Length: 71
Image (cartoon, rainbow, N blue to C red):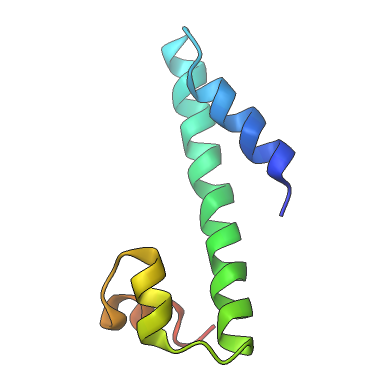
């Protein structure tokens, strides 16, 4: 995970230029999705249950399994 990229994008999301801000928000969303996917995979490799992963993400077990169950 490149936290510098996330911090840079988050800062750009606060830009006074609304179009620049929107571009940064979209890029930040993609980066966070990528990081979340990696974290879920690492948690599953460490034998974390779908229920525990869902609890950490604030979603249902079914939602997290549907999104990442085949990853």
